[in-house]
Image (cartoon, rainbow, N blue to C red; front, side):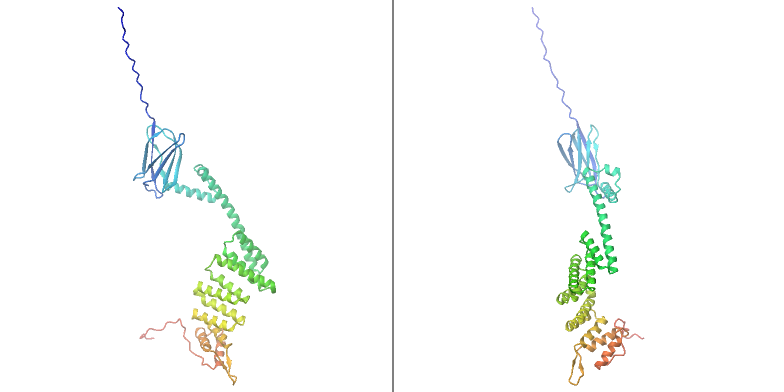
Length: 379
């Protein structure tokens, strides 16, 4: 009888594949060294495409588990900007790979690198810690700084040479040097202001077309200076004086008024200058008005009162008997001068004018700034 051998089924057991994963954790500190919450940690896999993200918690800590073993770039993003990164991180089985971000230390390092680059003393260690982009930016900054230093030296040399030439009245040389400086840095108002002064002074040594051309150049350069420094009343006043020499009185008046508005503390002096310029030009009425404005802007401006009085005497009329009639305010102007400067350089002249006018000369003057004793106080 045939024996039947029963064949048992073969059972195949396929062992379940165990996933090989890793973890990355760390802490983020802000620029003040404090834990930073809600910083975004971006984990970018480099060997195979993959991207993971996690935010920091209240204590600035983060943890991302379940990461495939691999090589990653870890980027810290704050307020939408990447503020730090660690590249080429190789994860491992077991304990998490720790990647911390200390933004204060990072800022300190960047400041140290910037300071070293500024001095041109970047160390090998500092260069090694930088990305190619950072190295390129630093190298460019160092080259730009070197070029800037060279430019500044050339600029200073030209400016100083121009100042020396102006001081010694070598006007063509001063024009050359200041013009060269202006080409190197056209945003320096002091260059154009001094170039304008050179042309103004040079015009005083010239006549005819040459003089006119130099004064026009002075105007042109004062305007450049004023455009760059609109609150510098000195430039505006100097421009007005050039206009006065050109006998362009409307422009002169406008410039003086602008200077007075810009620098109200010295408004009296600007109007005094205008009065002097108009007097020299024979514009008596306008000169008197300017001197009067000077006294109104500065009630203690003694010389303005004297010149106002002199200006008014030029408008005196004669009676049929030959005696003179002086405009109202003439005597008061001289009296005011003597009150302010009883021993001033024009004191005798003022007294002489008052005597000519038949006015009584005050013999006792009080200092307007002197304090009067309080009522009831014994002297």
